[in-house]
Length: 470
Image (cartoon, rainbow, N blue to C red; front, side, top):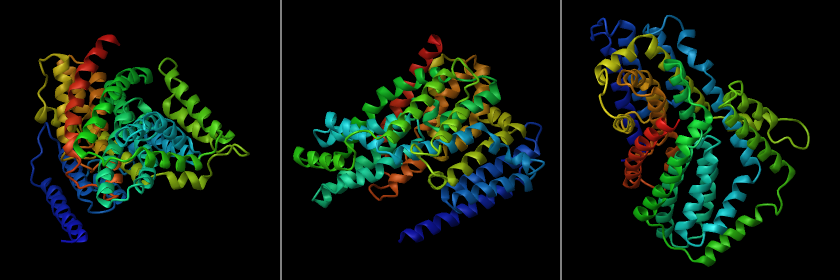
């Protein structure tokens, strides 16, 4: 069966499932715990998720349709009430991060860093993969993990031309193209700025619990997880997928080729990009003690500095708009809007009562492990991390409060695990490498399932320690 036929069949299934879910609201009786607005919101939310996963419409159109359905099915009283997510600060941080990522690709910063690590680690094909994963993770700590992965897809594609044997090229491509998004997502755990999911989790915590996680405290939680998990992921990828060996001469030849594409000395513009990025990082860290240095506001000012006219101008408006993913913008805004309606309609209370107990009488590590397991299990049927965050944020906070566990630790585990959405290549980041055709849908879990198990154990144990330290 052709690819187009498979896609068409999936879309038909998605349409039928969405229609059934929407029709169900007229047959499910409303109760005191599940009022009409909450019942309707449940059906709309599930229908939107089904349409996103089955790609019935382009992603952005599905998001816009979701906003309209919330109004027409009376989940909200007005259209503006269904658009509240588009005023959320997290959304504009994501917008700024696209521009910052573009600035890093305009100058050869990423290639220079890759070249340095290749000289240190790139003596064989496995260590070269670790170098690429390490650079990707480092970049992903301060820019969007989507952008961090996107930077290295063409670099890997170019490198693979070194192989003369087609079978060896395909074998190595599978390992590299699976390891790349995994490294990007793992690196995104290091700071709140590393992933929009981190920012969204913090935003939900502020909204539903009146608490926040300062930049430095998130780093204390996220960096050790990345330091341990990245080598584990690399080891699993090379053991499971076994990249084809390559002689040192050919690797050195590739290094020489990269060197010809990079100026010998850093240009003034390159230094300017790094200075602005470093200044933003310092201010983000300082925001842990100086709340006026809001992470989003700092990112927006930093983005503006890349547009200053003159010799040091890094970006043009066309550069910026071409780098922005409208799909990501609409998805994030729609999911935050739906999260707000899930809470205001009473649906979050119903989810808490039906899915979760009122409390869990257990130790903190076991509670956090429960949250991590639930996150990874639900990412299988709902592989859209922003949707999962907005759907379960309020119920998990209520469960944490009822169990005497810190909501901040709960949302940190929830956000960190949701960042690692790579069991199947259905999230935006792995989808980019999956689209290259380097591997099949069910190749990824051969290594990533074990990575997620390690993540469950690490996050639950380390964050319970962090709770006592912080």
